[in-house]
Amino acid sequence: MKEIMDDIGMRRTIIRLSHEIVEKNKGVENLVIVGIKTRGEFIARRMVELINQFENCDIELGVLDINPWRDDTLKSSSEIVSLGVDVKDKIVVLVDDVLYKGRTVRAAMDGILHFGRAKEIHLAVLIDRGHRELPIRADYVGKNIPTSDKEDIRVKMVEFDDQDLVVLLSEND
Image (cartoon, rainbow, N blue to C red):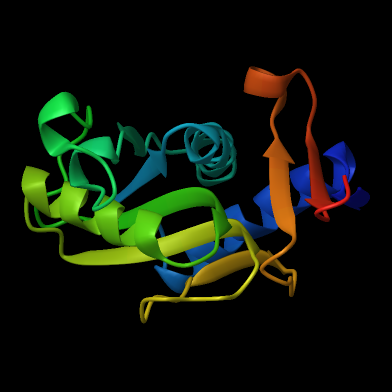
């Protein structure tokens, strides 16, 4: 097990990503942030708090459970839960912890479109580890960590795991 990012590094990275989102969108008008359950939700919550604080605004946060749109689960067993935010004609920033093959993001985009046609969909990730199976890339990346298929990235969040930490696991860990 190798530590990639500690709690201070995660905080700095989330602050930087939040600033990049505001900068690229020239402000926060028509912007909504949607976190992909579970850890993407917590990263998104932190981003919304930061952006609202330094932009003196009140942007909305949505939370998306992608299970009904995954191609590797039974859709009938998953209940569609409201996003809690209107995405129609909005700039939606999807937030997730790790970008790997792209399948989670594909399902998330299907989920967003289920709730309305967004003006744009952007992607923000804490870690991009490569190995895409789909032509998906993040617009905002906290850190690129090249990995092998035998390695795994684990993001721990204080809200769920009682600590903030990103680690690289090899098959021996």
